[in-house]
Amino acid sequence: MTRTASYRALALRVRPSGEHREAEFLTAEEGIVRATVFGGPKSHLRSHVAPFHSGTLWIYRDPVKDTRRVNDFDVVSWRPGLRELYERAETAAAIAGLVLESRGGGGAFAAALELVRESLDALETADELCCPRILVRFMWNWAGALGQRPSLERCSSCACEPRDDEVLWFIRGEGLLCGDCARRTAAASGHYAGPALGAGARRWLRAVTNGGSVSRVSLDAASLAEAETLVRALIGLSGA
Ligand SMILES: [Zn+2]
Image (cartoon, rainbow, N blue to C red):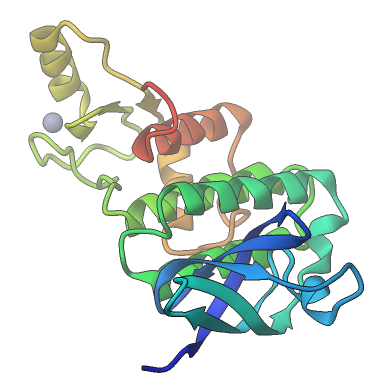
């Protein structure tokens, strides 16, 4: 059995642990991988293993103690731009938190890694206005990776094709419903239907599905808020 394995990896979080550090990576091969980083403040490894760096990672596993340590990390993308603006750093940390919470995605780890890499690359040059849009776009596509993304084109209940200007309603366990179905479902269950997804938010979500630019389709503040409420509900971040 080989004790050293290599991964295509992105560092998500690094925390002090005694005199060493514990790092969490998203890898294309195994999803989330945790390993100890040995070395003092000036060591080469310590500067390489930092959040949002990505490249090729070598991990040594001790089969007896069942511990893992980082042997080397050949960083290809350093993403220094993420540290230049508060909003970028906050958004990147939010993305990392989501990825860790959902254990690296639904199992298609290579696609998950690509999605995270692409979002962080977009974030590197984003201004304050674009950062929240990149986060919402990430959550929308992450919900897709987790198999939790409803269709924007058809009512999840009656399968009708809503008009372009029609408001859709998200109901947990049902999906995105047309007005008629939302009313019927809400009346039957006694629960409020929502959140609502207006035409502007729907158009924008359609444009950013699978990585389209966040600026290709215009988005007003109300539509951004609708899209954000929906994606948070989809990935279980709120009680919606
Ligand atoms: Zn319907």
